[in-house]
Structure formats: structure tokens, C-alpha cells
Length: 192
Image 1: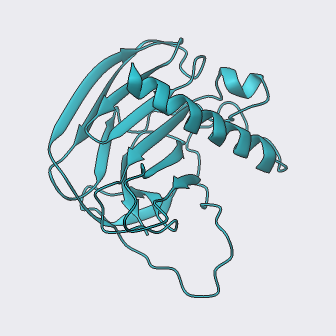
Image 2: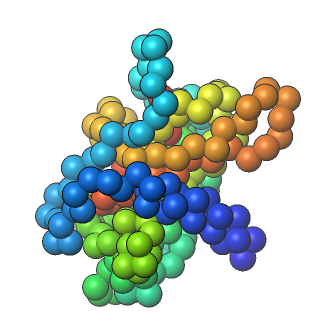
């Protein structure tokens, strides 16, 4: 329950940000293979780092039945939020966070596409699903991290539209999280 409460504010902030930044044409409802959106970031005169962030995680897995009402699911350091009305039928969703030196998650069924959910109808978050990842123990205190779609071999395929809550000072014990809008299910990792 406390995880849900901690997730509500970031998701609402992300929704407000999307609403404020959504001055482009709305995407169609029946998208077959939506493209990944570039992460919106502050202009940076220095070249950006690219690649996956060194971030250990232990193995975790979860399976849950999601329906048109939406819900949340936690697997390790990752939380999946699916908006109500984003799914038209009941779907069994599995999330696997493999052990290793990269903080990533595999979401299945692969390719599951989301329609804009309830919050989109209310003028808010125009996404069916959001992936929230804690990166508190990662080798970074930067706000330039993003969520990347990755292959099974952990090659970066593209980046999601991302919001970051960084730790501004090395001595701070504040939460560090990153949230990205999911166009569809695949593999996702914390990246530069």
C-alpha cells in the first residue's frame, strides 16, 4: 500500500508534465506498433553519455492478472502502472527483473500495446502504462538518466519519454526514481 501511495505523486506529476507538453497532434487510438519517443531533456552543450547505467539488481519475478480497470505490479526495483481503460480485455502480465549489473526488466506478453487510458480522457497522462524504476543504488547522481528499450542482449533500441527524480547531492539519502511512458511491452533498462 505504501508503494502505491509513493507512486501516485510521481505519476500525477508525470501526467501534468505530459499535459503541459502535449502541444503536438494527438496519437491515434488504434496504434499497431507505436514508435518510441525521444526523452525530453534540458539542452546540454556537452555530448550526452550513452549506454546502460551500472546498477546491480537481484532476481525478481511477478505475474498478475490485469483487466480494463488497470492496476499496479511491483517486481524488484520496478513498478508497472497500467491506467484504467488502457486494456480492453483481461491479460496475464509477467515481469522479470534478471539478476546482474544492469537495472532492467522484461515485460510480457511482448508487444502488448496500450490505448490511452482514463487519465487521457480527463486531459491528463496520455499513456496507457508507466514504468517506474528506483535507481537509488546505481552508479549515478545525475538527472540525465533515461529508460531505454533494450534487446535480450541489452543493446539499446531507443529511449522512452522519461521523468527523473535525481539525488542532487552525493551525501543525500533521497529517493532516486525514473519513470517512462510505455508504448508497448518489451525489455527496458536504466540508461544514459
